[in-house]
Length: 77
Image 1 (cartoon, rainbow, N blue to C red):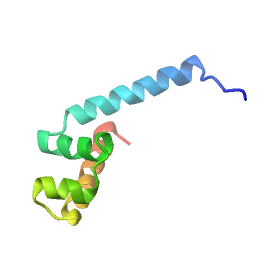
Image 2: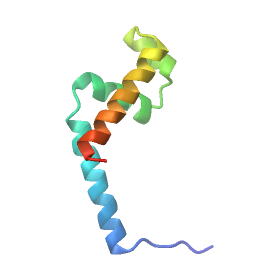
Image 3: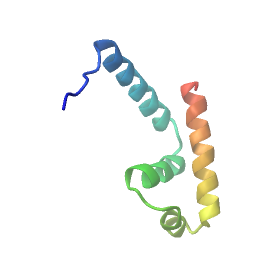
Image 4: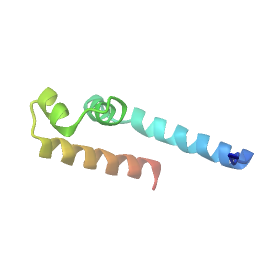
């Protein structure tokens, strides 16, 4: 099976997008960053995050949506 290698341009583009995302995440406040990390990095469920924050799963889901909207805005997407 052959793998298709990315062009130097594609590699550079991907790195630039990753850097933009890292800067956007770094600009979040501590609570926002913690929620995003718990969900995406630590793979916690909405229920688990809610239990840790003493909040409902609906609240967590709404916060994640709001944080993702903020990240999209910061990146300019």
